[in-house]
Each structure stands twice: as structure tokens, then as C-alpha cells.
Length: 267
Image 1 (tube, rainbow, N blue to C red):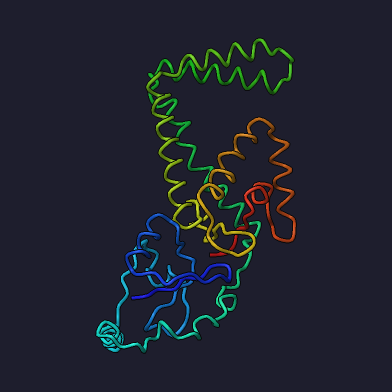
Image 2: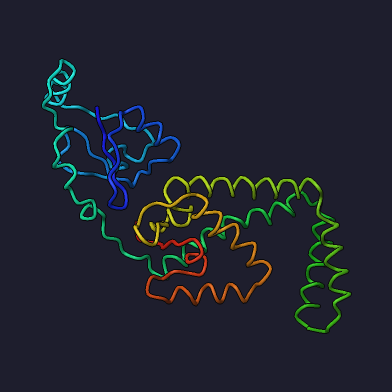
């Protein structure tokens, strides 16, 4: 079987089925790429044929099997050699997309942030009753010192250090383990569909800003999330405010969208 692929108005192939599945597994071929082979009436997204899986097993009709048999027996007439395949406009097959609303993106962000909260619970989960009381007292004193704006930074730092000393080492390890696992889970979902858990629930996803195709994990996750969060911790809250203001543009691209050259659309 000879299989043709198309992306960004550029056609490639033919490939055999084994080559296609190898490229799918290594993500050289994306589920959003268009595909055509004998037995198909039109170009379709590969993910539609594989039902979202990274493996394609076509179901050949009887007529297709007969045509394959003829080809193997030496027949020279083959649909694969039909030059009309070169004239199919890939651009017409690209789906129109609708930008995700600001509200849906904000809700997805809240859901994703909420998934990190259990890590803070783990920090106090190993407390004894005496430690819980002590922690509550220190936390109230620390909060009161900050709210009163007394300028006594030395006292605030002292209270903060006492709070950190109360946290058992196993609690810190448990919290870090949770954060790493959650980071891996989010990266997996984003690599698979361009959706974090929050975006999957809200039904929006990350795509390339120019061709609406799925983007690499490096752009969708590393640049948009990991790198941007790192700088956000340094420059907060100014970077967060600037990032939000960028979403008011025509393409609703936040600052981290612009850095990664992505947009967020309805799924």
C-alpha cells in the first residue's frame, strides 16, 4: 500500500504502512496531517482514521484488495499513479477554527492551578498534633506581620524560617514527588493532544498560530509553561499582568503564546 501525506500545502510520499507507523511513533508525522491512499475518496486527517491512536491499520475493502493483487501480479494500472492526486488542494481540507474565549482559557488555568494545591497539603500532612498547633500559631503571626506592614522584615524572615523548620523532610519529598508526577502527566497530555488537563475539561487546545496544526512538546509545554513560569516567578506580578493584557489582541495570544507562536482554539 502506498500512502501520501500532506502538511502546510506540501505533499509527501508515497510511504508504505510500516514507514507511516514508524513516523507516527516518533512523531515525525502528526495526527493532524492529511492522508490519502487507494480506497479513500478524499484526504482526511490521520487522527480521524486512527481514532487518536499512534498506529494506523487501514481496513481495505474487497475492491481495494483486488486492486492490490492486480498490482502485485504485474498490472501497471494503479490509482497510486493517478496524477490527479497532485492536484488536490490541501488548503481546502484544513479545518476552520474558532479561537477559545478568554473565559474558557481563564477557567482552564484555574483548573490546572488547582491541581497543584495537593502539594501544599502534603507539606503539613505529616504533622503531629503539637506541630499543627505550632504551625497555626506561627502562620498567624507571619500573616499578621505582613498585613500590618510594620516594616519588621527581620521578624517576618524569622517566622518564615521557623515555619520551614517545622516541615518534616518526608513531607518535602512527598510534595516534590507529587509535583514531578503532575508535571509529567501534564506534559503527556499536551504532547498527545495539545491539551493540559484543564484545557481538556474545558475543551480547548493549543495549535500552531499559522497553520492550526498540533505543535511540538517543546513549544506547547517547555516554552509556554516551564520557561514562562520560571520568569514569572522572578518578575511576578508584573509579568502576569502583561501576559494577561496580551490576550486582548485579535488572536487572543498571551505573551507566552507569542513566544511559542501558538494560539488556543476550541476543540
